[in-house]
Structure formats: structure tokens, C-alpha cells
Length: 343
Ligand code: C2E
Ligand code: MG
Ligand code: MG
Image (tube, rainbow, N blue to C red; front, side, top):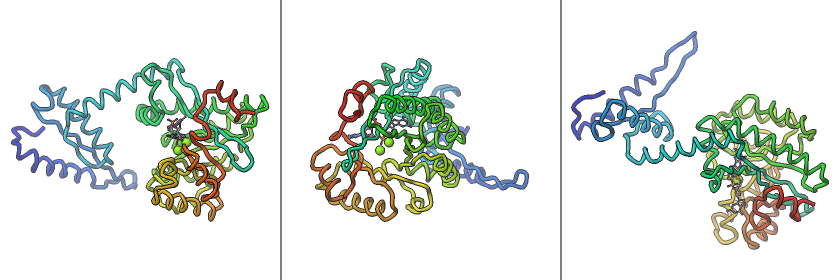
């Protein structure tokens, strides 16, 4: 606690104090002959503006620290009133997610991925939540919350199991759907037992590993290259295929493409949606197609919505695998079974 601050201290001196604390924290130290480096994220709250009691001030500082961590760690943030609102929304989301996990209120929708050349069909499993306050939310919103509050393992394991069960059912039923893709979130990917879980489910539902595709984003690899490589190799040894989702939107170096066992690049929908008129997007998708063909990777275009986009993907890009609203929206099981993609 720093007493009797003036407005000028707040701007000039507080950051200096915080930086001194961070410098102290970042001095490496030794434990059992290992050099340990740590860093600190600092949240700052000011009396009486950000709270009238020690308890309130600590809560505000805690919220600000959370934001400092979110902004890349090893930095500091002053508390802002909007942080409270955002954190309240986050808490509502979290408790709804907990209820949803408890009452098993999830389903999978499946979006066809069609091969324009031979008509074969795979599907991507996309989770939906039936909890009243989450029903309208995209998993792009609630999956990151599940990651933060430790629910992703429960949810992710359920997705793998349900996708395997459904695919086994499709095959048994004589469907032409041959493969299912499952999205694996960063935290889920880091778990050391992911391969084990996948292996067990493949066994339980008597599925060949080549029928399962694991979709990860580039950032998953960037987060921890060495363990990502080990995990990918384990999955590959099992026989599962690996697709890089949202390709082109991450920040990783392209070196990983030749060093890691990757099968498919999924061109991110933001580039596809600019086709055929946006010249930047045209260059980007052509570069991605060049990479895929040079490195003998399968190419899939995601998010095609119009005939013009579909024509460009097929004729200009020479890409035969397409997923997007122009082919089909994600469908619930009943709609999938009634669709032209099923038989
Ligand atoms: P994604 O894996 O890139 O999935 C594609 C998303 O794009 C889906 O959104 C799909 O509905 C949408 N999409 C497909 N075609 C089109 C199109 O032509 N136009 C437009 N505008 N959108 C299209 P959805 O289902 O809301 O999922 C969003 C994201 O949430 C997914 O992006 C994925 O990152 C994540 N997600 C979904 N299901 C799961 C899951 O089971 N586990 C994990 N970890 N993440 C999931
Ligand atoms: Mg995906
Ligand atoms: Mg994607």
C-alpha cells in the first residue's frame, strides 16, 4: 500500500514503483541447481476511487491484475470500472457453463466438408450448448471461458467421445460420411493424456484412427513448440490426421510446417470471404495454396458462402475440399441424417 498519493504520483511515480517490483521479481534465482525465472503481473487500485474498504480495493486490484495477465503478462494495469462489468459477465458465463457441464447440456452439430472431385464427405463436429443463457452463443465465445475456468477437459473429452460415437453410428448406418474432425483447444492439447483419451475412444467405438482428424490452431504450436511436436507425433503414430485450423491468422513461424507431422491446412474463412474481389485475400489464399501443394499438404477452404467464392476456390485455386454455408450450415444429427450429405 502506498499512502497519500497525489494525482501526479499516480501518473509518474506509481509506474516507477511497479517497475521496481517487477525488476526485483525478474531477478533469476537458483533452486536445486536450476535457474528459475519468474515474472509478475500487477494490478493497481486507488482509494477511494476504486473501493472504499481494503476488501473492495483488493478485489479491484485483483481484477486489474487479471487484465495485466491477459495483456501478455509481466506488465501492470490500473483498475477501470469497465473491468467490473466484463468480469461480472465472465462470472455469469462461467456459472452457466458449470451448470451446463453438470446437466450435460451440450450437443454436437456437424458441418459437411465436401470433396468437389469425388463427392466424398467428411464432417466437422461443432459444439452447441443448450443452457438457456448460452444457447445463442458461439463456441468461439464460451470455449475460451471453459479454458479459463478449468472446464475444458470435461467438455473436450465429451466432444471426442460423442464425435466417435456418432461417427461409429453413421458408418454402421451405411452413411457415406467417412471422417470426423474435432477441434482441440490449446489447453486441451497441452494435456499429456490427450492421445490416451483419443486412443481409448477409437478402441471403444471400433474406429480406425484414420477416420479422426484433430484440428488445432497455429497458436497452440506457438505456445509450446517442443511439447506440441511430441503430442502431434504421438497422434500421428496413432494414425490420426492433423489439420491446422484458421490457417494464416496465427503468429507462428512457418518453419513448423516442415518440421511437424501435419496433414491439412484449413484456409481461414476471413480470407475466403474476401474472394474473388479483394486482391489481398486473393494473394493470401494463392500463397497458402502454393505452400500446401509444395509441401504436399491437403488444402481445405473454410467459410465459402457464395457461388463466386466456390468457383474461385475450385477453378483458380485448384482446391477440392470445401466447407462453408454455400455447401451446408452445421446441422444437428437429425438434419444431417436427412441431408444429401449422409447417403
Ligand atoms: P472453427 O473450428 O474454425 O469452425 C468453423 C466455424 O465457422 C463454425 O462456427 C462454423 O459454423 C462457421 N462457419 C462455417 N462455414 C461458414 C460460412 O460459410 N460462413 C460463416 N460466416 N461461418 C461459417 P462455430 O460453430 O460458431 O464455432 C466457432 C469456433 O468455436 C470454431 O471455429 C472452433 O474454434 C470453436 N469450436 C467449435 N466447436 C468446438 C469444440 O467442440 N471444441 C473446441 N475446443 N472448440 C470448438
Ligand atoms: Mg475447426
Ligand atoms: Mg476454422
